[in-house]
Amino acid sequence: MDKHEKVSISKEGKAAQSTEERLDSGVDSLKEEEYQAVAEELHRLQLESERQQAAARTEEPLQEWQTQTTDEGDTLLHLAIIHEAKDYIKQMIDLSKNTPFLNAQNDLRQTPLHLAVITNQPNVCSSLLASGCDPTLVDNSGDTPLHIACRHGNLYCFSVITQNCRLEHLHTAMAACNYNGQNCLHLASVHGFLSLVEKMVDLGADINAKEQHNGRSSLHLAVDQQNLALVKLLLRKGANPNLLSSGGHTPFHLTYGLDNCDIQKELFPVTHPDLRDLSESENSGEDVKILTGWGMYDDIQWNGH
Image (cartoon, rainbow, N blue to C red; front, side):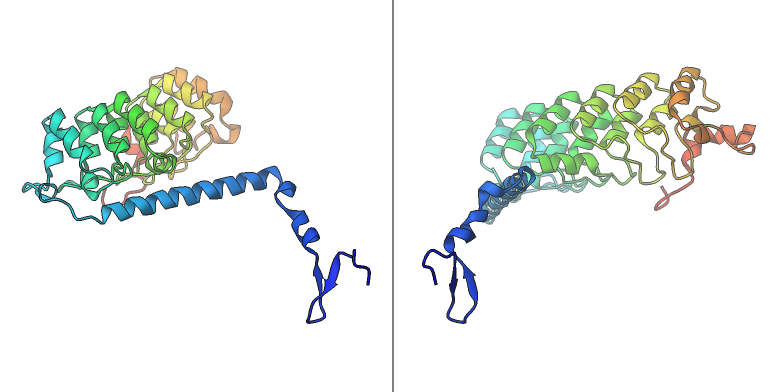
């Protein structure tokens, strides 16, 4: 047998590839998508390692002052944030980096980050996030701190949270529905905060996500609020005008009986012809009445809500 052959006979009599041939299918032959997959896996492993290290640090017992709570379950940090005692806030956060103390929830299940948003203290939000708090925890209404910022149009706290939390936390918070079945985009749409809607869509929020209770999209909500500017924004950002609510209604259907005809004109050309007209019974005066306002959306209820 030629000594330069690329196969050799193993002790068991089977052919085994030479080292040269086995190494020939290495990294250089990976496709671009395979490189990306490897890079993403390495990033995931790095994040997992960081989480494990943080978990190891949190195993240290809390100090006595960190365990003290009021009758309402507020810790000293909760109280300091409520009273905007900036020096005490900073000191307690600095002493509690990556510990469960930063995620302590009071009787309303509010974390310090919830209270920092409620009291409109973006600097405190930034410090909490930099020190390892969890922005995906929910209060007794199912709201994350980002939900609260979107409900109240708190652009400063919204910006701090979206710019300073981990990407996976941001996506989790934006996608999460509270106990009324609404996510952050729904809340911003209901209250007409166009800048928040636009920023969330740009950050990857699902523009066509439906409310859990009634299957409404943000475009349905914009029509119900007769908010022409929001309707235009959502359509420009790619909202689907042909989505059906749980009751089988498109956003265009909701324009029947509304005062703002401009919204109907905006939706007419982009709505599929088969989804423009209501049936004869639905187009009666009584049914037009329930298509407008909140009555239209009582087709599905969960837990009595």
